[in-house]
Length: 458
Ligand code: TYD
Ligand code: MG
Image 1 (cartoon, rainbow, N blue to C red):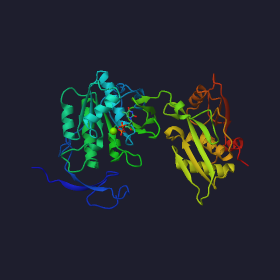
Image 2 (image 1 turned 45 degrees about the vertical axis):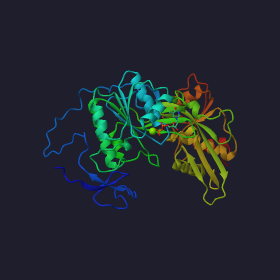
Image 3 (image 1 turned 135 degrees about the vertical axis):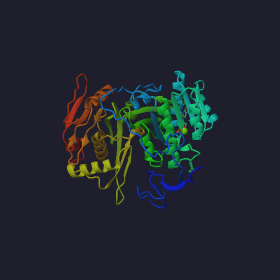
Image 4 (image 1 turned 30 degrees about the horizontal axis):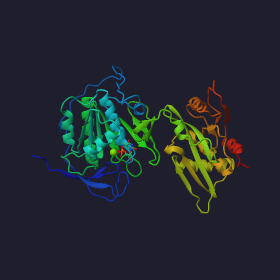
């Protein structure tokens, strides 16, 4: 006889459970996130049975046989780069991103590539009907690929299908939030359902050696919806970002058990699907011939790859009591800090000005080395004098106004030189090797030197 199920209230934000409903989750402090769910025991296929007594586990030494994880190519070089050199069989990869950004397109392309290479690839769509996926496949010119396609949301059916025949090399689930386990009494997309589905699928993938690509929805703040616990369960978490008005898409690793977690892959959305962009610097540089005041080129690094990006600033007199600060693609707190440092250490006050800062091309910059380029853009907009057209900037600014050395300085300069830049403004400290580069270096120790050279400093 089945045990009577027990009702619990689960926070849809953090996954905390509580026996009673409350307006506010005591664990994460979010309001209105508790939803009643039935705890009906372990999910199907999870292999968990109630044990009364554990068995003793054999302990191992740290030293012993350990091999590099084998990998296979996804057929898409930028995805291979982000996953650390290819997809590891048996691993689970979660891909999050706004609706319409291109997750389904990317995954269909991956499935088709694996199938074309002789692998077995299955695509389970919980969001679209078979006909819709077929339409996309024919648009992408991939209709001939031997991908097994199903429109299915029932977890047990999917698990049964997976166990039938040769284990697949690649399984695509689009998306994890649409799946439901019929043993649970909760609606699809709730914490228990998403957790149960992820757990069962990942367990199957590990056992059968099938790589799993899971699509995850994102909330309005851009986080993967549902409990953080899903991000802990999978081996790799990727975010697909980009401005929907622009064709560029950036695939960013935020967690990777099998490689570095700071790599990005750059794609362009064209009529034939997502195209890899092998040399992304040219994309983010903007129109180089008409450089106006307020535009500075940041010589950045994303993962192992140097990347030049245009940072644009607009400083305009404000009619408001509290001037506006608006930032796209950078951290608002970082801008506030930089404005305070410019005021306190260089005597350039933005107190009566609205400040807008924008990173061209829809890229999000998280590197502190962007400080110097942002400062250059702000100072240039303030003084109305355009920066030299062939100059790049990088360096972290500390609260004292000192410019600190950045990582990978030589590759940044090399990229700038390769793209025809002739000058670089960079920190005084740190070794660089500029042999063979036609680049004049201006090494500065304090932000003041930049402010003096750019104009508005008294
Ligand atoms: P999609 O993969 O459905 O996004 P997601 O799964 O993340 O919601 O991508 C949808 C967008 O991509 C849609 O707006 C149309 C565009 N697109 C192209 O521009 N070219 C193409 O070849 C395809 C298939 C889609
Ligand atoms: Mg989709």
